[in-house]
Every structure is written in structure tokens, then in C-alpha cells.
Image (cartoon, rainbow, N blue to C red):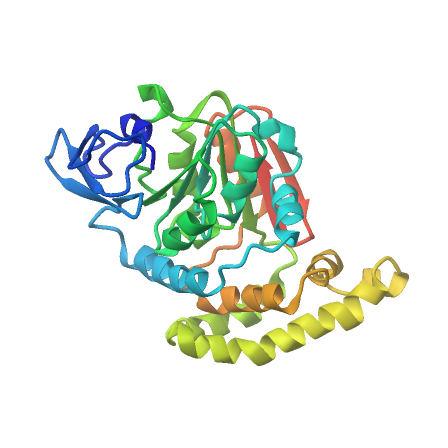
Length: 327
């Protein structure tokens, strides 16, 4: 991380400022300690990453972080298709929107979205994740000098809020809130970090048109999440072959036809038909490994934004089975 970030960091327990110790005068900090001026807790900086994970993170969050941390240490590739997918998730935001902004990637995984935000000209990007995926994110983002990677809890972001003179011009959280024990509470807490005139954009699983996932995949998930990720990796293989094959052989050739329009989740399955097997295998594995998943109605997502006092709210359906929201 760059030393300049310290001014904006806060203790995740007491919310007090932090002081950097054990570091020679340098703009880049690879190792050291951040000491809370209020409670004297000490938080390490290792590998250029501030480690600001609260000691009392809930069990469900720890399970989710552990599962996804394992996943993103084994599926580390940055594929060219990811850029179009990112822009689709944050639609209608365009690359030019990022220019000159301070951005928070809330739940960064391997850092692929933070990579594009930085490349689009963001002044500064902070990539936050609870899991050990931050190690992979650091490697993927290291060439970019306008990105920081921080290990911390989205439910208690370790930064100055907008009211404290900190915050971000843009916060996005893609595919993360629905894995929290309380997705709405996670959203509400992020809103505190949006600067006046700023924007928050989220993408979540939809309730609508996801009956198969809710009624078939969810019962399987309740069993599969008890298995070690290394075992799930093998079990996901035949399922991914079927998923990938159906998308390629059935949905792609029929897309745009009357027969294709009668197929369930035509838009979604046609979109994944554009991916290679590795990406679709990751989608299947993701469904099996996540201990917690919520499916959110469009009206509920709109309520989140309205009750948080956000303006210019736009809620859009994505691929018939998920929701984008921004305001």
C-alpha cells in the first residue's frame, strides 16, 4: 500500500485513526504495524496489505470468506471476457465515468473489477475483501500504482466515512451482498462511505425466475458446503460439463429464435455460452461452495436505495435472474 492511505484507514473495532509504526520513510509500505490511537490495538501490514479483520467476525462470514478465499486462490486467471462482464454488471456506467474518481471495490475477490476501474482512469481504487483472496488480488493489481488492497470486513469497512471527510465517489459491490448474513445491513453500511454526489452500484442474485436455483440448487448447497473445497472441486467437474454443454449446444444456436425464447433463462444461459469451460466451471463451483446465498426481489432492492436516502435510483433486471441497482 502507499503511505498516503494511512490517513484514511480506521480501526475496525473502535473506528479511531491509525498510526503507522515500524516503517522507514518510504511512499510504499510492504510491512509494518498500524496502531489504533484510541484502543491501542495493533494491526499488521503484510505483503503490502493492511490486515484489518475484526476479531469478532461472525461464523457464517468466516465460513463464506474461507470458501471464497480457497476458490480465488485456485481460480486466479484474468480472462478478456471479464471486462465486458464487469461493464454489464455496473451498467449503465461507462468507462469514462470512473475517470478521476476515488473508488471502493467492496468484495474484490481476485481484483479483476478493481483492475478495470483503475485502467479506466480512476484517481484511486481501494480493493477490500475479507478473505485470503487479497493475496491473489495483490498479485494481479501490483503493476497498477493507483490501487490499494485491504483485507477487512465489508460490514465494518476500515475507512473514514463520508461524514468524517473520507469516503468514495463510487462504491460498487458485485456478487457479494447476497452472501452476507444480512444483505440489506451490508448495503446500509456501505452507503455511509458514499460522498455527497457520489454513486453506489450493486449486483445481486434475483428472486424472480430463480425457482430452479432456490428449490433445487439450494438444497444441494446445504450439503455441499459441508464438504472440503478440494472435494467439491472434483464434484463440480461433471456438473460443469453438463452446464457448459447445454449452454453451447442448445442455448447459443437457438438464441433469438421462437424456440430459444421459450427456454428458461434464455438470456443468462446464452451469456454464459460465450465463456470458456474454465469460467463456467468456476460458476458451478461458486454455487456449490458458498455457505450463504440470498435471492432478492427487485422491489426489495429498490427499497434498499430509497430507505437509504439515495437519489436517481435505477434498478434493472440482468439476464432475467439477477438485479443491478445504483443511486
